[in-house]
Length: 150
Image (cartoon, one colour):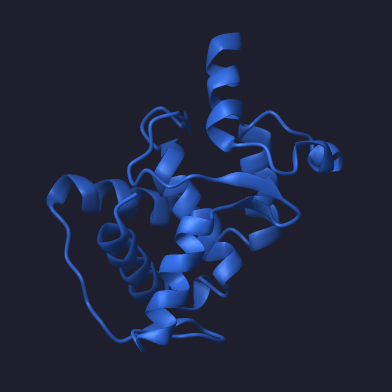
């Protein structure tokens, strides 16, 4: 995991998504999609962009890595936690990374957190009613299993 790169992506998301990123929970889901969603293929991929480790919990996909970076940005005063999330630092990316991130933002920006959770679970092959069975399971393993089944 590259902490500086994670922080840079988090700051970019907060700046670009404004009110549509209404909580750290939605931020977590968007970070997951940046990590594992290929917008060209419209499916999840095992190899991540940022090398964060995600697992399933009661709120859906979760990463301790992302949470640590987010909390660090808040304690450094670079993000004002609360509604809406606000960042006071601007960042830039190379064209390839920016395009990948912008595609995720465009596709999922206006999807409410609950619907985003269900969409991700569906991509992972998990019924939302059965989510508890997967608590603590590493998401890369679920993606790998889904790729092998197809």
